[in-house]
Length: 214
Image 1 (cartoon, rainbow, N blue to C red):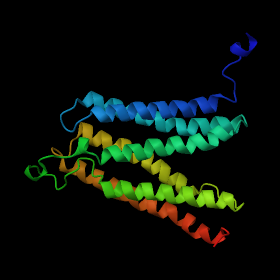
Image 2 (image 1 turned 30 degrees about the vertical axis):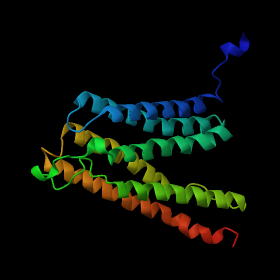
Image 3 (image 1 turned 180 degrees about the horizontal axis):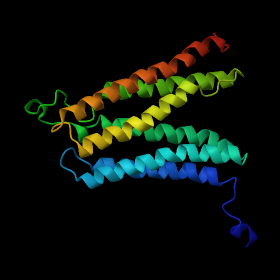
Image 4 (image 1 turned 90 degrees about the horizontal axis):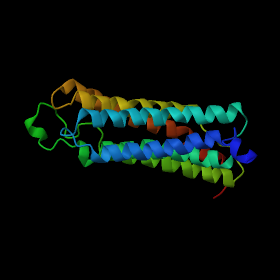
């Protein structure tokens, strides 16, 4: 009985927050799966935005609690970045998907065919960066080299976490088919995200020289 009343413990709370982020990411994807631009309700789109913001916000919470209480764990070290990538990459995959395609774009005033301004190649670049960094870190650990997260990587994560809900908010509430300036902002955010993502990978490219091997 004592064990039951003492749960959750401090050691488990950061991990629970991480798991909660994964659950909110899944719910976010479900909402986007049912959203269709421009036919779906504004409420559905805004619920998805709110869920993303809540999920992204927990990224700072679990890390802060783990450091404050000195309860870092192997589970957290693996699941925390995994949940981050799941949320961000999943969001970009949906943003460049058919649910946000402007089907009859030539008849509108908007000079683009994706309401979000995010295209598949952009998502491929973002995914390639994450795979590259993960591979370099794995090689570094295998060689006994310290290769922690870079500050530019954190800036990249923050920018992505801001640009995704902003793009969604514009698309849902100020559709580019009606407000061309809204579409241009989405396109600008997409290009800036790709640029920052590429720049954030440069330190890892240079770091390969410090890893032993062939």
